[in-house]
Image: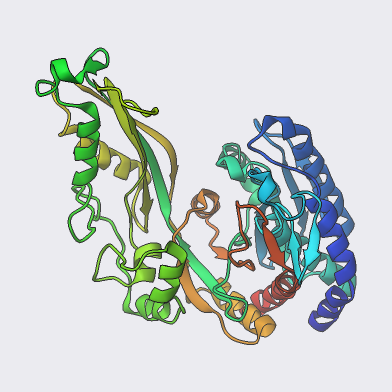
Length: 457
């Protein structure tokens, strides 16, 4: 059945591309309310295609926000593995639109790449999962595993409806493992398996002092400037080595094993690549860790923005009544985002004078996740990549966060395989694209994965 499914997928490439072009043409931008109908249209289109592919009990399920599309195929029986596939059909805004070579929702193929908003993030990658199942069912009438698919329309706005949906529908979504394609590989010749994601605590602080902005000539030297207070807080967050100074911050950090460090050393990420990507010459941070370890496997604390006082053209001599900053902390296993937020608040409070007030707002939090490299799911995924790309993948961690992956692990007890097929692909930027060869290889990799998973677990 494996070879027949792969052959069917190859024979349907032209049809799959036509369908993908139609899907990408729907401007399902979740951050803009004027595209609410487009979001709903994309959900209905997706449900129709899933049904045509052979999935059963397909349903567009309402939430407090945008709908979730669910479908399943459980014909492998109760003794077989059940895989929960996740993806998102919503996309980012397209601004600045004048930088696009072709209209963002009129997909074009140029030099083996399909250009459109959502091509790589995440419509193209998630669509590969539907086509893989379609090929297996068309070729052999069955799958070697049970499959459930859940596709949301709010990922680009933080997935506010998804976690409550998962908690409410635990029985419906019960699975042995999860499978997500919403990421990238190292390069077109080097597949990679992400086995860990960092969590996050995103915080905004606001320091309020005098009852109004004050004349800096009349009151300067007698008032502790709120903008300076925020700067003092920021300076306190790290030492000269880049180590985070918040007491208790590292207490629960799970250290990298020698095996993990060796696996990360095999990832071809060089200083020259870092320099090209950043435009800088000299890295900063914990010198006892490699560049890749710092950006994927170590916790961080970064200032994302600062505000306070006069920002307009020219000068205005004031002491601001209020100032603040936005700070994101990327977390690693086994850090608790709520606990880290509390530790941050306690650290910051010591800088606040008695007659000033501090407000700490938590905007986003998410748990870090890890799937052991030696797990059956990761082993099956590695074999699938090698079968399709012709070489074994390298194992790496991802510096970013996908909070719902932690929800799947916590609420469903399902380890998650992160099976990306993209590259940089101008994701979230003008001229987003997705290499068609990666789309087709993605379909083949998924087919191989189900085959190997069924025989390995």
